[in-house]
Picture (tube, one colour):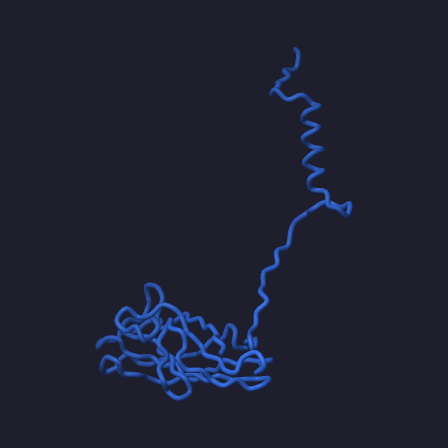
Length: 185
């Protein structure tokens, strides 16, 4: 019995040419072949400071607060201080800095961030952020107050607190994701 030879319309010469051409495309100017790539992302900015590593992705432990401690809409509970540390500051570039905090706000109170994620989320409570003087910072708005920069290191102090956004607060996860952006003057 004769073996069956299936022809697909390609001649061996054309197939060999195709393989050689694709290999030639992968060859670099340095004589080697490309095995992968590396992409670099970054920016060159004219910023007066850099954010210290410990302030870039920090966690503020809000702890636990009992739902029955909230007796009325707008009531605040348990202040939790946190800081944003700036380093390598140069007052030759800018004289002051303001911070905008952004994220999803509470549906009933646009002055606080939504607290809680998923099926086990707390209800009727949000997280508000105030500056060191106690001034509430409205979410998602460019800063209206600026702090003078210090040459070298500048530390910005803030306070996070839970705030009742309705009369009956339901227990559950009360975490929030908030980002900050620096504005220089």
